[in-house]
Image (cartoon, rainbow, N blue to C red; front, side, top):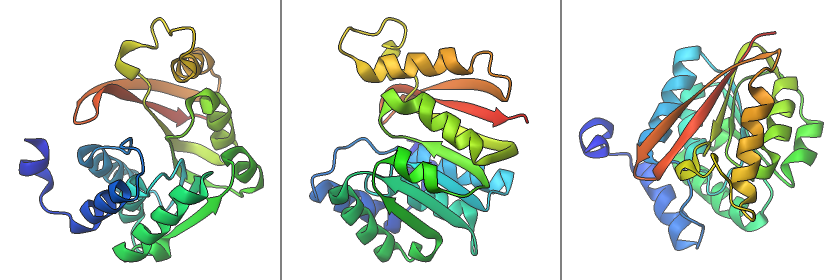
Length: 207
């Protein structure tokens, strides 16, 4: 209902999704509605430089690239060369590739070498490193910048993470880390839809 009535046809991102699936990438990208939301957030806050941690096939990257507009830049980090190859093919086919710079190595290594400042950071990578990613993003942000972290509800598993669920444990640790953080104002929204029951955390940099 949401996609058919509100989003309309979007061949560039639809083709990216098809190509990612055909290339064997896992079906863990944001939904079309979430992608449009990320694009609109970029536009609403006037983001011109965006950092993305976790490229996968570049589906969310394309929405962010639209959001920054002509002359804007999305810097996206991907550790897996096989994923990065598919993402680059999607960027080239979309016509938005000139707005995207991709770094292919472990995100923590790339983050150590990046220069700020970013207006928005979108984190959707390995969850055990969520706290590390947020702290790096904070170093690359300015007061008023926004940090968005995906998959922060995980079907409620964050309430009582199973012994071997490192993703839920990492996400739970993120809540504890930001709850009294002196430089961050935080909230989270739960989502139910094409990607199941999950949510996003929103962190505004205060100082």
